[in-house]
Length: 402
Image (tube, rainbow, N blue to C red):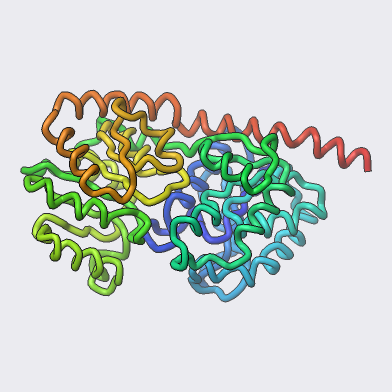
C-alpha cells in the first residue's frame, strides 16, 4: 500500500522539546517506520521550515519525508500556519495527480484541511488523527488559547468529511460526538511506545541519593509542572527534575522557566528543583530509569505519551486523570491517577509511593507488561492498517461507480 501522511507542523525530523515539537512528531515518525516495516511505502509531507532542507529526505527504509513549500522557509508557531494551508493543499493536489497514494492519513487539524483540499478532488480516501482538539483546549485555556478562531468549527467539518477518524482515546470520541461527528466514523487506536528503547532493562542515568520525581515535556503552563513544584513543599526529602524546553544554555531566556523558578523560590523548594532543558530522546529512557516516579499532571492531555514511556521503563507513574491518561494508566496497578491542579492531593499520592518500595516495584512491573502487550508499535500499526483497509473498498467502489 502507498500511504501519504500529512503532518504540516510536526516533522519526524524535528528536534523534540520545542514549543511545537513533541508527541505528534514521535507518533508520526514511529508509525511511519512501523508501517514501512510491514511492507508499505510511506511518504510524510511536512512544511518546509528551513531554506537548507532538501525537498525529499530518506528518513528510514521505506519512509521519505517531503518538505512542502508553503509559506516562509522558516520556523513558525503552529498557530500562525493557517494562512498557508491552502498553498499546502494545492501543492499536495498537484503532486498526487502524478504520484497518487492509496490512502492519506492526516495528523492535526490543519493537516486535515490540506489533505481534504488535495484528496477529495482526486477521490483518495482520507483518515484523520486530531492529536488534540480545539474545543478541549479552549475549555481549559480560555483567553490564553492562541488557536485560530475558526479551529473548532474546522475540526468538526473535518470529522464529517473524512472517511475515518482515528482517535487516540475514548474521551476524544465523546468530544467528537459533541461536535456532531458521526460515531461510526471514529475508531480508537492509541499511541504506541518503542519498547526496544523504553524498557526496564535500561541502565539508569544515575542513582540519586534521595527520591527523584521526574517531569518530562514541553514547558507550557498546561503541562502542570507548577502543580508538581507546589506539591514538593510537602515532600521535603524529594527532588524534582524537569526535562524539556529550550537547550540548557538558553533556559535563562525562557519565560516559562523564569516563572517556574520564581514559583519554586516562593514555595521554598528552589534548591530541590532542577531544570535540564532539552534532553536528547535517546537519553530519555536512562533518565526515566533514574526516577522514583515520573509525574505527568497536565490540565488536559489528548493521550499522554510520557506516562506510557515511563510505564514501559518500569517506572511508576503519577498522572492526572485526564484524556488518554485515564486509559493508559491503570489506577493502583501501573500508577496512580490524581485530579489535575491539586498539589496537596498529588503530594499525598507521591508520599505513599516514596514510602512504599514494594508498591513501586509492583507498579513498575505491571506498567512494563501493559506497555509491551497493549502499546507496542507493531500492534498499533496493525490497528491503523485495519482502519485504512476499512475505507479503501468503499472509496474504490465509489470511483468505479463514477
